[in-house]
Image 1 (cartoon, rainbow, N blue to C red):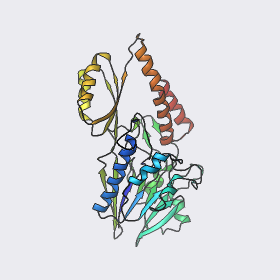
Image 2 (cartoon, one colour):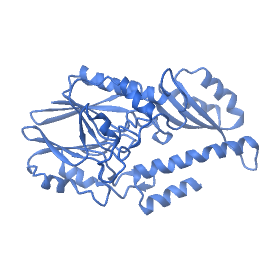
Image 3 (cartoon, rainbow, N blue to C red):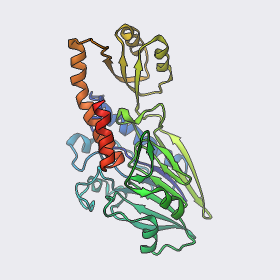
Image 4 (cartoon, rainbow, N blue to C red):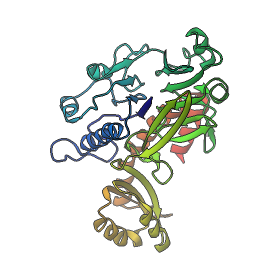
Length: 348
């Protein structure tokens, strides 16, 4: 059996500085239409038997008329689909009230943990978003669901993961890394937007298309996974989404710093902190680069300098600081240590 998996579409009208209208819908929605249709078509090209979304197909449990209407533009592959319910999809802790029900005619909605036998000795273990005070270990789910000890288990999850390092922060809530390594053959997770290999057999897939600047497209790709299980042998292949928005945050103080702009990918959304003498050259680069979809320039205020432009930039940035805080809590949880570190960074 062969599966295509993607995650964290976050179907929404706007995100970050992407606020303009496209040919029919918002630029953000039109990008997501292209991204989902690309993934669906890729599944057919690769001969996949099923498509699975690892959660947060929607950005909120309540949808607008434009978001609902834009769903009509999606060309779903005519194969089975499964949609795991993520934290952004649901308005209740038990996930029973969620926006994913809009897709019930497309495929099955997974709002509770469950097993599915996919080969003679291989199982899927679905774990939708479960808050830390209710979530069990993989070992406990295996026992409850009576999955044989000798069986191979592929966990399909939308959850926090405990023990991941983000700079000075180590996540303190979620499924434990040791639990992942010891109790499943493969762990594929949504929820965390910065896709990465988190342990020997564990991966955060990352969101299908970019949403905010904290995702750092210099380091993280937006991709899908092709998962194949044949005679209980498991293989995976990552394929990058060519339509994805790629978010970049740069600081340009010198001519040398300007060269970093040459490394940006297609569909770039850029935020640049700059010194005044570099503004003209930066703007020239932006005006002559068709890779850039949207940009935001933030003047660096030097010691002792105060002017109206700098004050306006600071006021405009307030919303982005709040977005950073919201995004960080969503990724890392709201433990005391996490909140203290986030507040320290914002105050710096």
